Length: 106
Image 1 (tube, helix red, strand yellow):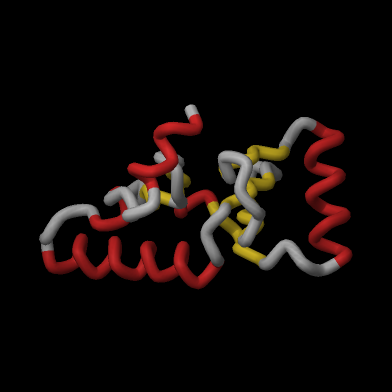
Image 2 (cartoon, helix red, strand yellow):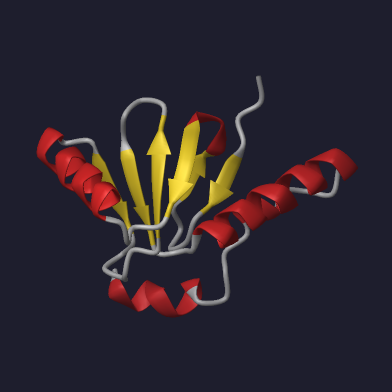
């Protein structure tokens, strides 16, 4: 089994073979799940202080918050799979243009 790593912003990477679903954070049920994950210690915040645009649910019960939209994460996974299929590298691990600017926040 190959581990697919996808860059989800701000030098954060997720193993996509452990992901069950990616959702928007707007609905009340999703907000409840985020709060429950926070209370249980299963919440992983990878937003670097930015607004949460996607909630990633892992098979381990962990809930990962991302500042990238679900469509962007899915697109990076598709690009990574396409490049792996054609043998042209790992585009899922390339930093996005905004990451260089965010280094000042560390």
